[in-house]
Length: 183
Image 1 (cartoon, rainbow, N blue to C red):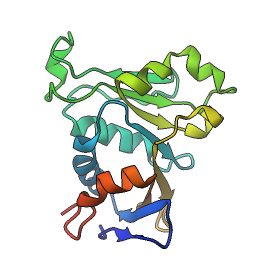
Image 2 (cartoon, helix red, strand yellow; image 1 turned 30 degrees about the horizontal axis):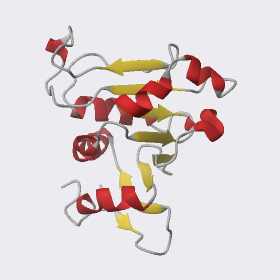
Image 3 (spheres, rainbow, N blue to C red; image 1 turned 90 degrees about the vertical axis):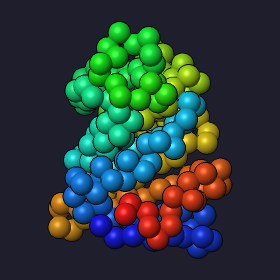
Image 4 (cartoon, one colour; image 1 turned 45 degrees about the vertical axis):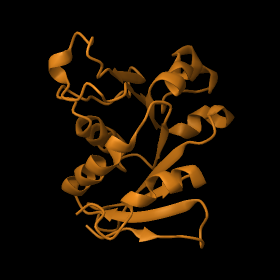
């Protein structure tokens, strides 16, 4: 895995890029990124089919301590992971302080309004939202989200990960984008 390339001024939206060589690198990124998530965060996962969006979401959820199965929400559109102490499936979590996670895959939506029929606006205020295919929300994606863009590299195994966000995200994550990031 390469250390991230930082773009301090050259590109105001993309503030870091790194190459994830394999699943171990994806898990290492998730282990550093997941603990930084707080209630109200919206993380948009962008990339083509097979780019690794679901694998990255799974790694983030597991990095927070979830011990159960983390299936793709492709067919039911939303999977909710509750880490709270009163969660009846408490044996599946290892971190009672982690926020509730809404993992959404909006690929099958035909209209943005369909997402709101699922109640996802509640997640925007009360949980961390991991949204695959965020473009399906159109203009309804709330401001202030972070995009994790995944691209398949030429060798078909590695992934290029771009972090794209506003100045608030850039400042918040800046401390973790040092030379020892992912070491």
